Length: 324
Image 1 (cartoon, one colour):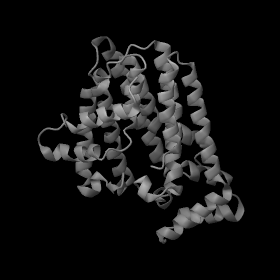
Image 2 (cartoon, one colour; image 1 turned 90 degrees about the vertical axis):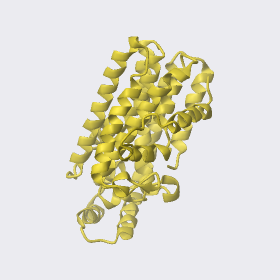
Image 3 (cartoon, one colour; image 1 turned 30 degrees about the vertical axis):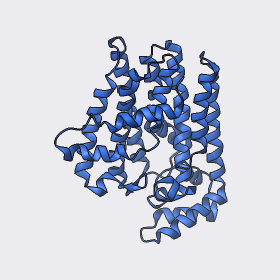
Image 4 (cartoon, one colour; image 1 turned 45 degrees about the vertical axis):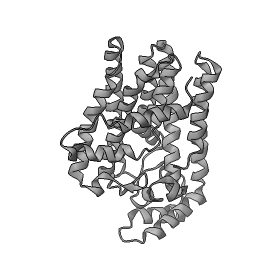
């Protein structure tokens, strides 16, 4: 089986070829800008790893894996516009560097390009692969809609929040694993199991993102620390804080959520102190570990060589320990 670093290098080289780019250059330049920065490239890596569980010719899965990464970056282009985010991976977001119209149109072009790449597979897998990816793409939109609706609610339950991040984030990670296994000809029960495992890993991934937004380091995280706090974004930390806070603590938290004229640094400090007081940071870490454990349990059930599973465990360990 290929080493993780070997697969990452294959992904890097394929992306640097920029075969997706065309004219007018102004349409594709923002896509190049997003993809050249790298990011974690977790989704194409998982697609190749899943393929490599069953076949050695991973080059055949490279374009579909790249397609998944392009699709992921399309969702980020639009997500940043909706959130009016200023930083992504430590750099200006596309709509800040150019404008919102550019980000929306280039995002649309990236989505179409993604499908062209994902279609690179044997004909016998094409219909099922596209159907599966359509389900993932629609689920991502459903998750984003829930996320936007949550902005105007202060009674979002933990269950609702976990459902939202499953749709918005987890299904694409799950779909990456399923697609890689599918086009490798994996047994149906195994690529279904990999999809389920990816769902758990995706939940852990997003919860880690929520945690790092409040407790990370901007130099590592690549985004402004406390960004979720400033815009009252319904992160896992805020959802749990609103559930657990009582009396003066709840009054203080609601005061910060209602504030319109405030010092950003002071708000971040005050809300983080409330999180610490309520222990929601500890609860977030516990929930992350719970999902990682569930993912590992499914991995144990998959009938492939033990050394292949160890490569997956390496990715999972990296996921848990990441700082960005």
